[in-house]
View 1 (spheres, rainbow, N blue to C red):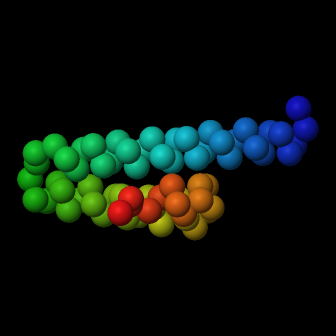
View 2 (view 1 turned 90 degrees about the horizontal axis):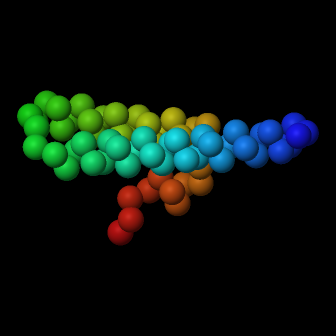
View 3 (view 1 turned 180 degrees about the vertical axis):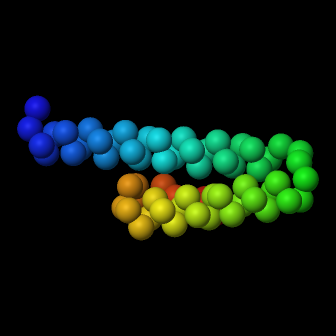
Length: 67
């Protein structure tokens, strides 16, 4: 395996993990909880989206909320 193939594998794993983490956050937000917990989770989602886009882990289409 050369470095290009290794980079591709790493990026695919990073993209899958990033999307899975956002999905987990979004599922947690749907469950009943305190307003403080909801605010904290929403802040986590926004921070994670920012990190994903900053490091170009996945394309912006995968991070944005569907309309």
